[in-house]
Amino acid sequence: MAKSTVTYALFEGSFITDAPALDRTVNILMFSDPDENAYQIMINRALLNEDQEPEAWCEQQTEVQRNELPGFKTEGKMLTHEIGPARLPVIQIANNFLQDGKTIRQVQSIIRLPRNSTVNPGNRGLIIFTLRAENEFTEFQRKHYVQVINSFDPETTLP
Image (cartoon, rainbow, N blue to C red):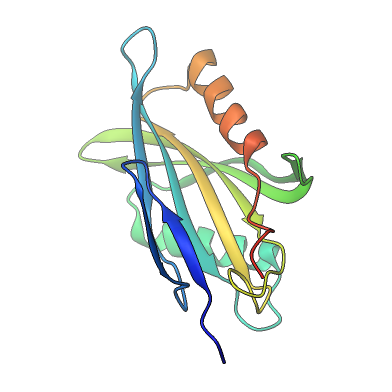
């Protein structure tokens, strides 16, 4: 099987490499809103188990977080809708937990990536966007997060 070469982009630049068998990078983007409130947008990746649906994966991960994070609580229900130019199905869940005596709030958007022979050949790949802050989310933070997830355009040009 011939390896495909890809340009791998980072914030700081890019490089050329053989396409990785699996990419498990985690991106933690740190911001401050105009009122100097710190927040992060985190992007990570996961794989569904064989024949597992994203909803079942979310329920499984919620249980993991409930058992591992002090004071973990879900906020509201799991929501499903579509986002971005590709109209990808997304599951959104909100929760909070305690870290170093502070309540951390987060909203997670879980997206099943479309099948792609290089990036997602088994059609099991997920990408998770998380808005995270110590305080209630500000309107600025929410709008920024919505802009990020609504502009996500999955790689479809690779072979």
